[in-house]
Length: 129
Image (cartoon, rainbow, N blue to C red; front, side):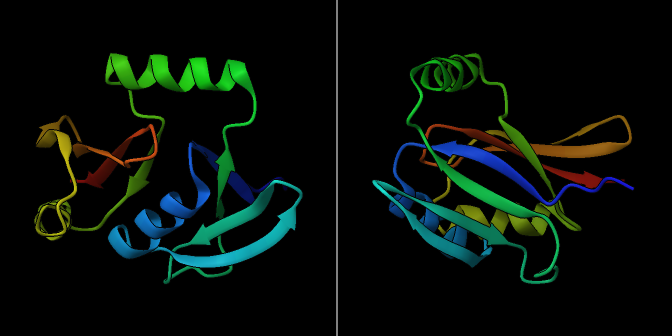
């Protein structure tokens, strides 16, 4: 059976991204391996430390920068994270000065919100209803 082990989100600055993803979103650092100018830098959910890792991938490839910018400008989330209580998470993040382009709203069987990760991406939060 194939399972997702690592997925990535492109970031303009790995240090800034690590700070946002840990201090604001609540992930914890899993792996940090020097790789020349950049690092293999991953975070995980504190409740699933052996689960899927999120690679904070440096923007070292020009076409990736173009793609990231186009998604951001169109308001399209780069990825999506599941939460159990979106309103509670939204209020917590707003208190930490996280900017949302879409406040919590119901969309069929889910409630969504979209935040700015300060690293060039829109990130969608989803709660199953």
